[in-house]
Structure formats: C-alpha cells, structure tokens
Length: 190
Image (cartoon, rainbow, N blue to C red; front, side, top):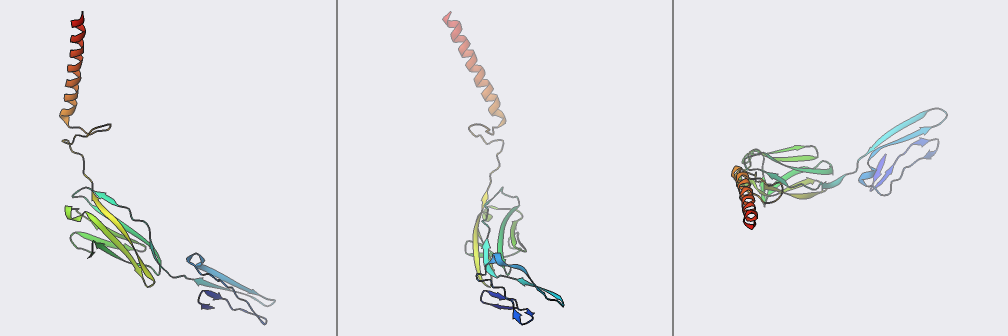
C-alpha cells in the first residue's frame, strides 16, 4: 500500500499485472475500511486497509444555559476531529482550569463539560470552548445566564401569572364589590 497526497494505491501482483484503487479527492467521508481481493487459479488473497483522514476540529453549536443562583450548571462542547481534539475553556480572556473556584472540566472523547457545582453571581457570563488538534482549532461561545425562580411575592401580569396568596383574595374582594355596586345601581333605578 502506498499513500501519496490524496492518492491511495493498492498493489497486488496477479500474474504480471498491478491493480490500483485511486481516490482522487480525499475527504473525511472517504475514511473507512477498504478491501482488495486477488483471485487466480491457485489461490484467493484478501487484504484490508484502513484509510484514516485527518482534519481540523469542527464544533457543534453550543447551547446557552440558564441556571438558578446556587444550583449546578453544565456547559457542553462537542468536537468532530481526527486526530481527537484537546479542549480549553476561557471566561473572557482568562483560561479556566479544572478545580478552579468550584469548577470541574471533564473531557470524554469528543465531548468536554464545564461544571459549576454552586453557581454564584460571578459565574454568569460568556464562556468560550476551544477545540485543538495538530491541523487547526475551532471555538464556540456559550453563555451561562441567570434564571430567576418565581417567589410567592412575585406578581406577574397575564395568563399563567404567578401571584402571591393575597392577590387571589383581593381579586375576589374586588369582584364582590363590583357586583354590589351593580346591584345598588339597578335597585336605585326602580
């Protein structure tokens, strides 16, 4: 087997002829196992060759993550690369390291996770995941943002609103007052 700048050659001696498989445009979709079979009156010979195509990392689009203050948050970054990518995480221009300020970075194959065990105000912001191999790098930006949980004192307007315990009784009281006023107006007309 001979590999030269995008050209893969299989060489089998079959009587006096050589056989070749030419792949003119090598791309990552061409990677895989190739099989060459030589047959004559005496024997059959089969040889397989694994074609590996190296390429720079590409990243899946990162998803922003919302987390309530004090809860656990996980940012994920997934890279497609051969050879496999190494990951780095950054907050603004500062690199984030494992076990730094209650943060854990775990890389498993093509996936890297940045975990916050107890999210604080200072954790919210923009994070950048960088995937690197010998052929290049790629990066994705992911935002960790605050999710505010509704509380009993929160009063929202509109359908599905969360109201405190006094709101329902005020609404019932207002409705009752309106009914009494309407009834009084009707009685005064008579």
